Length: 431
Image (spheres, rainbow, N blue to C red):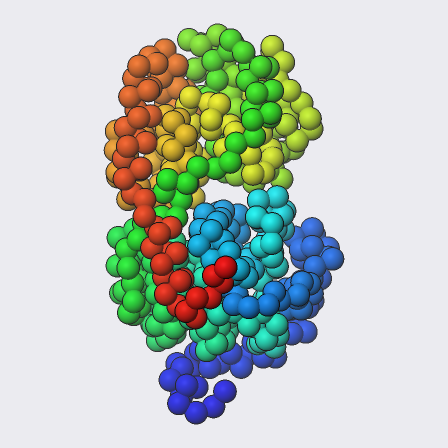
């Protein structure tokens, strides 16, 4: 592109876009290597090159994008709201990982199309947009690929919802201030999850930032009644707790916590759900080496009377386990991963424990305060679990306080829905 629009771009951005126009051969080789390692779906590599595997539905269409599992899950409620409000509206959701694609295959409502997102290669991006011709684009959180931002914003209103940016990411973008300002001002609206993110976006040059809260606030993950009932029956009469979304290194702390809590809770069953289920075999091996009796859901196991840890190395089932377990430790918080969103366990009535590293959800944990106690390691985690297993009234008070604190933080879905509808042609998708 030449003329005023191109001239407004910083030199570094023009260089990126020029390179992306020539990156096809290298990107093809990169995709092939990833497919060989199981990181890409070989049958759908065309989608990563912008080649659609589905026809565009007639009429107005909204394109939604969530990079991976968390972002795509956050968009499900908004997708449901759009379908209810505008039944005739076409919806296509893109993600970038096999795990998210497999989950969306099970979770997307009928009629919503899933595609893999194109890589940021100029011709591939244009091919994608030429096929789908979105009337509006809605992206979740903060994945900003320069070519994709520029090309999309030139064709349709572009919204960033559930927007969040960490201090580390903001510092990285600040090293290229002209590029950051240019890309962020291409968004018609940025609906930030929290005040810190809103301030960081504005400091980077964004002009249309609004604090809207998290799309996950008040969201309740789906239940699996049969699976939950089966596990409840297997664990009948036994105390249990859940360690959810654990990262590498945290399972050792969970094993220590189990041993500590079991001293005062005979028959204790620990439910352990790794953040990345593909680590299940390695986690099971490590737990067994630590002397614990382990079963695995992915292998079809049901915990027996002597099972100490039941490994929930599956995907998209956390709603069932959070409904079953009275206590939920949220992983990513003993490692330096920034923690995970506490909305779901709070909404489902689980009492929450967490480690010290919750930077990614600092405002949410500030709202929770003492209702989500901080633990420093495995021994402290086990002691906290034991206290709540012995003092049910204290556990219930903490769970109710967490539910009340985060329940008041809703409203993001309504704000996102209104932002999308305001940018569609009048009457688009109405039936």
